[in-house]
Image (cartoon, rainbow, N blue to C red; front, side):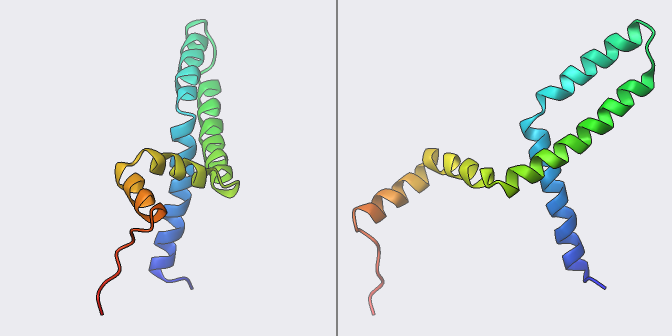
Length: 104
């Protein structure tokens, strides 16, 4: 049986996959809502909107999973690091050879 900490890690990992996919494709939820609302106004079934919502949830999870598996997360973090002033200063310091070395 897996320990509780492993179970927490796995749950948070899958949540991260969904959150990443949802964050990147969040504009799609408005399209689904608009089309679903229009469908209901013209007499369509509510179940179509529910199925589209479930499909979107699954799509978000798979998209987030692929985002991590294909390594786009590293590129996303690097983009953030290039604009981070602290990271910029650290890279300049290392590039110029001014790395702090403690006295012995």
